[in-house]
Image (cartoon, rainbow, N blue to C red; front, side, top):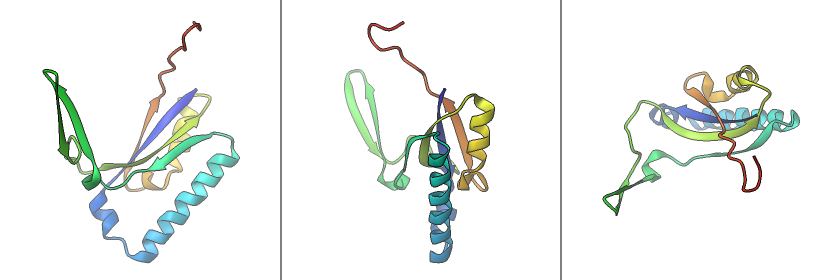
Length: 121
């Protein structure tokens, strides 16, 4: 089964990290990504730029409206994601617990909705 691991962290706290702490964070993520790839469970992932670069799009009454920034203001913001394969939710939880930002942020696990392709049940 495939799962999306959505990484949430506090951008304000992250911005206060000194260069050595930021470098350590990158090394930790690099190590995690290498481990995940070695296990054969890494299907992809990306880091996201800060929320001040976001644009939110809504369509209301046929009119497209876009606004700068995220849809909702929260203490934790999405910082990236991994797409993994895991046998079950318990295995996905074990993987998510190894993600660096699980220590002071949170990781949301979402099963991927497997949509059948045309011609397949």
